[in-house]
Length: 199
Image (cartoon, rainbow, N blue to C red; front, side, top):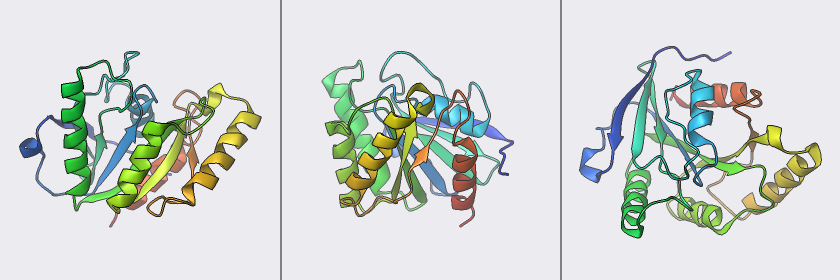
């Protein structure tokens, strides 16, 4: 079972020219503000306070790089959607994120996080899926907070996503269901990331 030992924050990037040089494989976490990105990163890596969590939507306002066991990087991308920030700042983060995604040969996969509590895929998530398709960036959908919903609602979300993903060529078909609270899916996330860091 995959476990990570040395996990350290190495860079917070808010300008394209400040991106770290290419070196190790990278996996990136993306999602709507308050989807639980930072909490999931902490839970997957087994480090409670590695990525800062907040109840304020849009707290992650830069690209945060975490070096894991000197073998790969986890990148926490700024949340999209209803971030409490100026339109100018949001535009800047969006452009920086696009520049990173489209110009990073070491990027192995984007994990696109979706809140299991919602009833449908919203426009922001759809826009991200389309952007990743157009950029030919492989991504995998991850449902968060599945401990907060009924089994019937969870199954509805899985079926809904399965139908949607058939229209998105860059999306992998396997959806990972997770909870940073009760541990659902964390071992699947760890083993997936571990395998991606090996090539």
